[in-house]
Image (cartoon, rainbow, N blue to C red; front, side, top):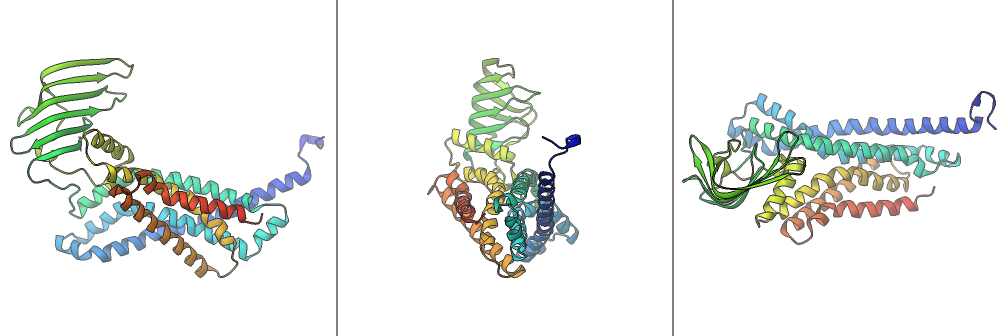
Length: 375
């Protein structure tokens, strides 16, 4: 039975206290190294970007103050790039330090397996992965501000009539049209899809023709409109003419190409993919970008799982060895992502495989290495 006072047995309490202390020590070591890198690496990215593009910025006449502010807005993007690298370096240095100082050996002698030692690092990688995705959802807005400060166009304009295109409107959802002539202000075979929200019902609209009026906005002709209410009710009506006051984009606005995928959040990319595929367009590049917005943050977990058992196989070297092994893994990982993106965008392989292939490869390798670690 339990000792007087209901206290747990002495050895069990001591063992739990030791594990708590060890978890705290490993977590602190990892976080110290991680935060140094995740805040320091973006500065290197800024230096590299500025070195490559300084002539362009000077030609545009971008003032130094505006350029500095642009990099402040771009800093979150560079942090997202740094997340997996910083997590890997933190893991390599933490596990490598424990290995060199025989702390892993001592822990094993005390009945603590390597897998148990890895638990705080693994849990930390899950939190960091979620943080990377959350930050990546903020990045599109900050990138648009950075581009504006540097005098970069966030969209490009198409010359001549625009055929079979999709446009994400500001208020009315996704607009798809067979043809747009900005000169006459006419749309041909146009559809508009807006998802339901708490404040407004969903709308699916199709019209044979849309005409822009300078004072009255867009007027759609010869079509039907389906309204989808939150309670499941649907209303469908045919119309001869219909005005949509919320569709504020002028023909010149619609002539612009969609924003760069980096300047769109995950949900925005998803809407574009669906709309482009429904209109018969080529959505492969966007489908790859859509999958990458999830697979890159998840790479934090995978790369940590791969790096931790790998570094236990050698007790050589200190900082130089840790940096070398981290750099090698990072280069291979990023190269695989680039190759996969190119193959997926061209249709050579499935977009999901293109985006998730590197993670899958390193995950399998990491699990094999984990199983081979002496526990």
